[in-house]
Image (cartoon, rainbow, N blue to C red; front, side, top):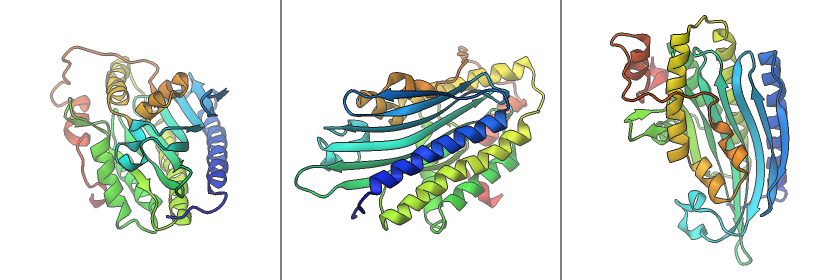
Length: 306
């Protein structure tokens, strides 16, 4: 598909503004912590702004990272499904968001919206969008899961009848830990190699996904922020965060791309939770709320038919 003039500049401007506005709104919601803004440069080409919040009222740790990097050879993590692009020069830009809440009744969430472009001397640029958002609850609520997927469907307008089912199923399959035989959470959207029908349409849907994530998560955070919790529930949250670590280090393509492209390690590993507990062969008590997470929620399902 053809790429309009100044397309990359338009995407970059949107991503940087999206990062800035989201950080302001998250600070307003948290009412305590503020973001540390860390500007960095990459010797191989490009740089970014990493915004990190810690020890807030709602957010124990949160990161909203923007990066725009370039290189002479597209890393394997980004070219695995497109072998014809191996070895081509590239540009990649995106915003990656991870929120680890203090209260275990608030879910962890992750969002990524990105734009890739490859080029050489002889062919026109090849471009595509990717990204998505997903929700990782510890103590889940049915109404929150439904509302999350309603916003996911809305974000794919005007192609919700085709894109939402496809990207929802892709999310369920992607955020899956095969060695645990469980999903990381209750899913949402995941997409890659998105370049049809045209740049303008794809770019608009990328914007919808970015704004839709916060429109879905903010009401959940505000609704659950004052839910009382005890140390046993906090310990369960720390234990379940271990699954997040396992996925990000073993399977996450964004992490692999960042490391393979010699990206900034501190920014790449911003997604790691602040406190994690690994327990040997731990099992939830039968009939407990902790067991309910496994038996009821960590299974792919059609949330919009409930």
